[in-house]
Length: 199
Image (cartoon, rainbow, N blue to C red; front, top):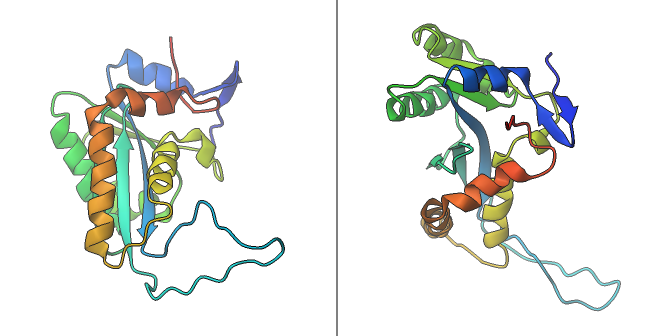
């Protein structure tokens, strides 16, 4: 397993420098879920008496997948069921369509659906257009998309959604704000420890 080189608090992959030299578009990908279960930022209760919240939302959730690039580009898709390998290939194919004239370097974690035969078959048909780089195990702090999820879920705290449609509307509102200001997405790459090469 290739491990990042630490230089000045930055995690640097040799393949990132090579990808930049080849003119590849570098994108980081990750998946997350947003549940109807309410997220609480603050609660008020007497000292030593943990409040008990009664909820009836169940475990319904939105499955989200996002790709972000260092220039602030953000691509996201969602559905009301867990992602499978076919969904991952669909998303990768959409990215390839977006960058028809440029090759991609995709950096993501080692989830089982990322290593499936379906994904390998897709890569085989792309003749080197898409190169995958796997982050080390148990190292979400290296992926800037985790900061996107953190930002998104923080914005949903202390809100109650009774349907997935309401949750989806709130998620889209936050994502539209990020689309309108790519500098906020680019800022995710400046966090100490993110695996990214800069000149």
